[in-house]
Image (cartoon, rainbow, N blue to C red; front, side, top):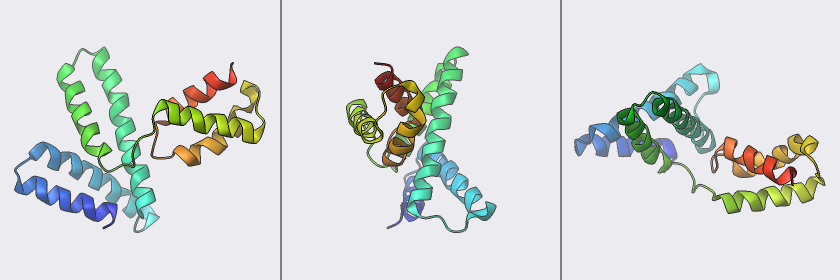
Length: 148
């Protein structure tokens, strides 16, 4: 079953179970996928769907920061709950230790030894972590590693 089909089935199940929150969250994700398909990308494969879902999670994480600044705990809780639902459809997220291991390999592979090589390292790391780790976290770990 493709990821789009799984989203469709889970959306139906949430509606049947009268779980409006989950149904609405999945519906928002499905609409983002539909928008991408209608913008000329055609039918999306699972890899593209994962990309879109990752963007949705990233948007919500950024929103949480803004909601916290505005003392809107209700919106923070809502965004966190939406993230939990969306993470079910993404591949298992990498831990910081796993990301560090990938970064270490990439640094050895490209022979990087200073921050000027960050672009080369990121070019190797990003394809290995795409959809499985937050890009901001990956970037942060690469910077830490190269500044040692």
